[in-house]
Length: 428
Image (cartoon, rainbow, N blue to C red; front, side):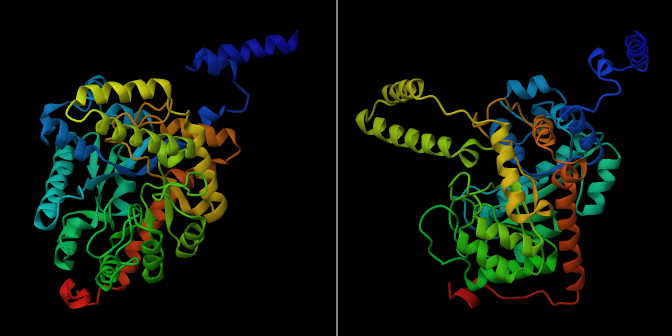
């Protein structure tokens, strides 16, 4: 009887302290995985490696920041966006690398202009929402933004086309705020092989190697998502600073060429870098990867069968999809990739780069957008991860890498900027 009375007193005291009935009922009990996740994210928020919101705003709203109120989750959802300020806060996001994507068909100066316009867009977003976003260009500035309750807004160039085969342009993009560059996107650049298609350079060309060295000198992180395994290896051979994979998963679990082989994961650990795990279904699930390939084949087949009749081709593909639903893929599958990267590379070399922003419906089951990080952290907490380990995943690992890259740049500050042209090194 005394035990029951004592529990009732604890329950009443917990209610009086402002806890919900559910939390009050658990007063004195160990925290649930979800409660632990929220506490971890409050202490060390997520610094996500990749979000394509700038490009989505260009496509949907011609890049006009006043065309949608990102403080309104309802407005963002109605526009088909998975990112808004409310969900960023609810998801425990303290830092976001906004991707400055370069479509592969853009080359030369047009690619550079596309990057610069997105840089301006990121700056305009920060100016429009000064209570929610803060531009950040260093690890210390990320920490300062988080301490003020704002999301640190960083920029990363996605696709080496953006430098127009020029070290001068690379330097200018760094001065404008780019703090990483993904060496390729889906297509090869003139100096690096991507993970898609047949390699034409056998990794990095001499100019490509000069790009990596100059990024180290500047303090710009080398991002190896999207590149071929040989390009990954070449960059790791050269890198004087830690590298990142801003949005990649483990190839051992999903054999997509975009993912990172175990041999490279081991080298990332030696390099001191970090692999930031992706949320896109066909990079996460081998079954979904096969389903996606079958879907693409069916789309091609139906276009051939219904030449000149796109409505009929679409109807046939819709019927195929109804008969062949996408295999299930959920947050547990993402957690499997996180744990695999940890098992092979180590706890100090794993992070999160969900690739939100323009998923066009290609999202894992149960994920509603940038508010879903808490679900991943809760899943890992339930698997036995300690709070200290979770904090490394959410933000501490990428901050360590940023600081290491900054230190390498400081040590190389006396080096003269190289004046090599691609024609000098590659004969082009």
